[in-house]
Image (cartoon, rainbow, N blue to C red; front, side, top):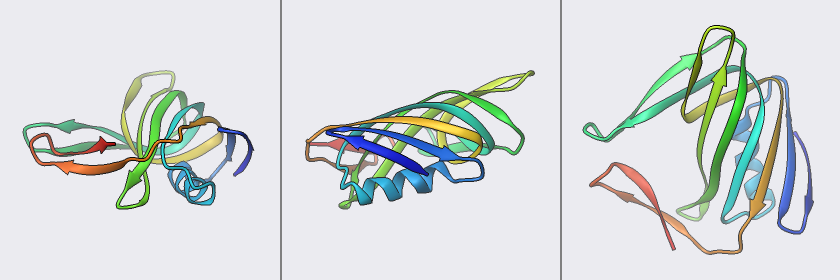
Length: 138
């Protein structure tokens, strides 16, 4: 992982074999990020994506352990119990299919270029049992 920060903007590069989720959490702690928007592109070698089954109130995930292009990644960094919390969605494509959803695991296959815009807004996530997610609260 390598990054540069200027004011409230960070440009992050994550390298082959690195865990994007772990790197984002490490960066959020190091840079004291409370709330930020994330976008990016790249390639993956091992990832998990899924969707929230609102009836079960749990995420249903699928694992992919072959190379895919990460055609779009978007999400945010916020806080839950005063610790960095990620909410990321992405789409991935190879020569046969396009898949996407809520990202729970993402190992980089070639490189990832991530752009982060930081907001100076206090927040905290609170679990909402009616829908089964940690909602953003201000």
